Amino acid sequence: MAIVAAVMVIAVMMRSLRSERRKVTDMKKITAKIDGMMCSMCESHVNDMIRKAFKVKKVTSSHKKNETVIITDEDLSVDQIDTVLSKMGYHCMDVKVEPYKKSFFGL
Image (tube, rainbow, N blue to C red):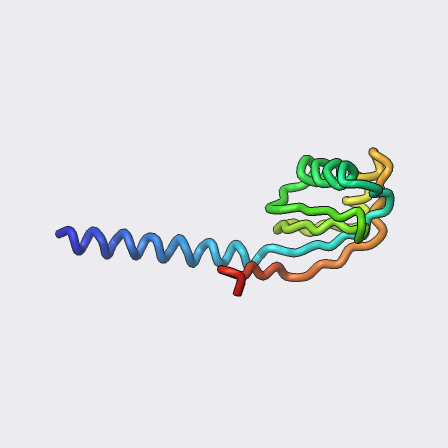
């Protein structure tokens, strides 16, 4: 009886894992060129504005590279991002979209 229960638990876990993989493959990596970031506090402001305006999995910014990288399942355009950021004096100049591939264990 215990073996049957263990097999059922493993089957449920495998189904859940497959479902999570499908979700990850639907994600997009959006790299936005941002004008106006001067310091690490600017990076923080941009990240907060993106998080509040869009459903994102992860967002990171670099004032040195003048870019923000957004991981999301939404399609975001230059205009959408610029509308949000322009309220605080930042401007989205360009957007590059590519499929997001999460590497497991650094592989």
